[in-house]
Length: 570
Image (cartoon, rainbow, N blue to C red):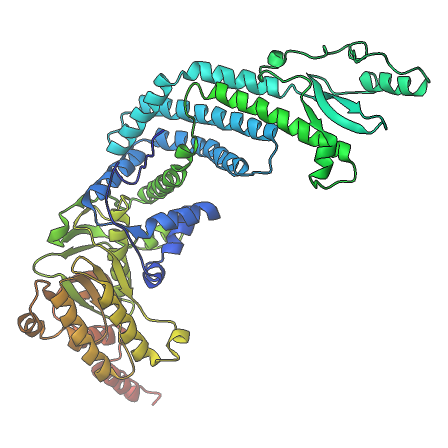
């Protein structure tokens, strides 16, 4: 089967970028992969696919359509899950095939197993795809490929030959050898007399030989051993085994073997090993030539699909569980890359959905969020634990999932792909010892700007929140100006409310088409609503709402004190 992928169209020239280790950590990629499967191999393969993203619109649409088919047809997932076991067998056989030390007969058996597995896989995929109405280009192409292989490669005859040949090969139980001696009665040459379908036992030729050796008879006249071998004819035409024409009496010079430097105290043993290996090798080659008359079998093209199938199946299984929690999921619509836009309805953080699936009691709040000409850079402010980090991460994960073709946690999403996702979340204190926190964060921001383009997505979470607010604010303002000038899309969530003030001055003073806007997480009736909306920073009013809720305003406390002072006990 020609090289084929369910992740990108044929002859795709798309470029890919790998998320930085910081972005992988800040977006909790490992948490998501661990939620998809408990198998380390699957976790690693899913992660490798997930963190290498492309902004190629054609590739993203291709993936979105394939995943849509996986979601629409549970039968497809069930059948391909069963197929994974067979593909795993092919993967293990591939390892054996690379073992140059394996015997010829062992290689033959593995070759037959590989071809049998290949036939089964092609047959199963063909049957599955012919019973459902897939619509994606990827699965339709896979369907055409397997149909062409099945119809054009003599599969029924091939399957029959494989089964018969494997059965006959497995009938080989023993080999009869002839040994010629020199004038000093030393082994001189060794030849194969016959291949047998029974093992030697004490009731067979071995017993007769021992009786002959012990009864003092004269030397046997001639070389006719037919009298000793009554369960299998001497010098047979080995076609009865279906494993090719054997060269009867093929010989190997024992002395040459001994002089060649092979290890072992017994040159006869070395000779036996060499002659059997050589003759079996010729037999195996004959079989391979016979089998390959049907098709140039290469089951590993199917094995290469294994990580891709796992990727789609595991995400589809997770999406089904999330839907059971009555949470919205949707297929993202891809907008032109040049627009640098994003429109999402009811977006939420998939991490919260995973926790809900795992049994945690979580009240998940959805939001409307967008990047457009009116705001491509948003300064997000709000109270502690008001959902700023959650929504920042949610947007990054939505882009990551959408660009991999996976349903996104929202009721609707249209987006222009980004070329990479850069994150700047609080650093581990152990990483700031040399430069100090402000120095380390500044260095990381510089590295981001060295790599980012106007098509990038930058997520800043409490960046530059040092003990010296004036220093952090000074750098933060320049970071915002730089992002506007570059033209990126960004969320900068922060407690520095002054950063979100007077943004009109920033938009006027710096050239660029990424307009900066302030959004806030809301407070309703003194409680965090986790809802975001466009608004100037609410610093003082947030504190006032919280103070009133918990009764720590001066008026409330004064009234409480006065009440106590007026009580009879006082």
